[in-house]
Amino acid sequence: MKNAKKVISRLSAAIAGTVAIMLVIFLVETALNGQARCRPITKDGEGREKLPETAGEAKATVEEHWLLCEIDNSVFLNSLETFSILVALWIFFLETPDRTQKAQYEAWQVVDAAHGLKTSYARMIALQDLNEDQISMKGLSAVEADLRSINLKGADLRNADLRGADLRGANLSNSNLSNADLTHVDFSNANLANACLTSSNLTDANFVEADLSNVDFVGAIITDTNFVRANLERAYFGDNSFIKTNLKDANLKKTKFFGVENLSSAQIKSAENWPQAIYDAALTNQLKLGE
Image (cartoon, rainbow, N blue to C red; front, side):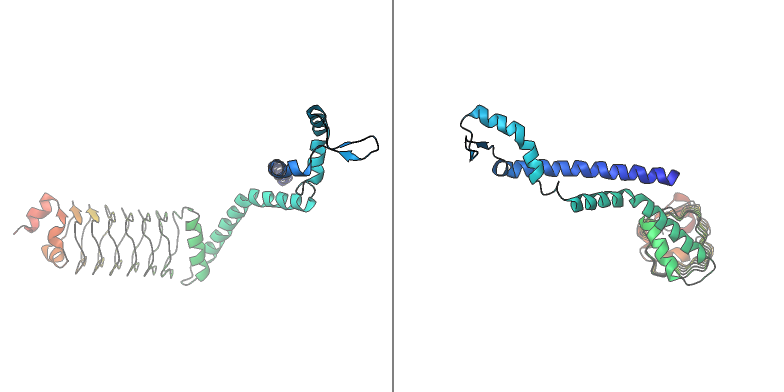
């Protein structure tokens, strides 16, 4: 019953929209061609057509026959095929939301079906399609999934479980990975510029040569994390513990370090541009970075 009402409602809307469009076309068509096509005509005493002799006679004739003449000569109003096509087009556009919703549902089915599989090209495409539709993937589970070079720019991946996933070369710029479990994830050469990694678990994560510019790492667990040759320009670290963290040749230009622990002078000075980083007073004094 509900589907029947929906069909009737959409069909009515399609017909109404089509009538409106054809009316506009008719008015335009009349304005462009009416004078030449529907000029006032009178007949003489012998039944032969002649032009009206007075303005009043012409006006009366026009008022009586103009509309019928225009309707009779209208190309669009006399075409049932045109009307049918316009109705079909209206129905097509009215059903777009349903088609989109169905496609998203099918995409989630593909993602769920690939659960536990390491490699699934269909899952890659489904996740990218969902992200393009700006669908939140909060809480996504893709443990040990092969997601190399996937494009999830701007994705909502809060609380995602991506333990052991392969995200080499992935585009995760502007994405939200806060509170995500990223233990053992390989982000080599990945683009995470402007991403949010607050309170995420980065234990044993690999960020070799990754773009981490402007990334928010506040509260993230950074243990055994590899930042070798990573671009950490303007990244923000706060309330982190740098246990066994490798910063060798990482770019620390204007990188912020506030309230961090277990960060040694040797770790910092193994990076590039470390004098240009921004440290809190406690860290500056503790590590004697000004000396």
